[in-house]
Image 1 (cartoon, one colour):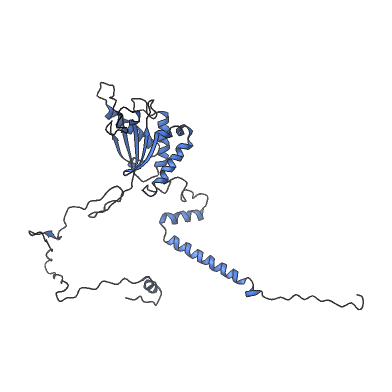
Image 2 (cartoon, rainbow, N blue to C red):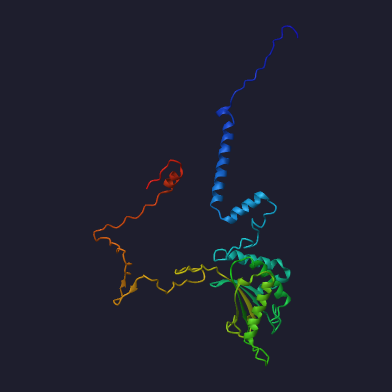
Length: 319
């Protein structure tokens, strides 16, 4: 080293950055992760058994639990009931399935899907040549079989009941053996029912099969119009079952209260007023409020915080 040159020493000053560097970010990230895990656990605890089973199946084997996690078809595996809130989705799905099949797309004008008070109505409307059934016969054509096969795939997962109707025009059936439009309309509806069941629709799903002949014309001012010949498939609304001795209102109607009276219930007297049932022997009659005995105060339900305190060891909920 040459004499006279100064020695330069470089010192690096080490120390914490502002706010202790980035350590707080790690702690905050851990806190957020823990909170997210907590909310996921709370959501799972409040979920249905099917959701819990689907989540558990996914983590056990993500590749084999596809049936548990659902699919892109309405009601597939989940058996989602069709009601007035989600019926539009099923309607759009059926229309999309028809457009995807080129042989059925050209018949889209003869397939009418409407929402009615009874349910989702799917009508297969005939033309002069006979589109879905052979003329004067209950035998399905190739187009009719293809369409009903497609509808069976869309409807068989649903818990809703299905109703089938057969309709004809006013042209008399040309036979001498007593076979009329009544039999023809019912036979066509039954032919559709059989094909639906062959393609997976359950026997319990079919609630009714009706044959109307020419009594419910689609074009009333032209009874001979070909469009009066049609098959209607109705996806009925899900109704609420009526509990024993009670009443319930569902989408499809109103439940009735049972008319029977239980022993000990009040019965109308001669003056039209209800008389209270007599107490059993040895049992004192209940005191009436205002006759010297104060009415019992309503019980106060403990709050959520009090219930949580009662779960802690040593904690006592307020009464």
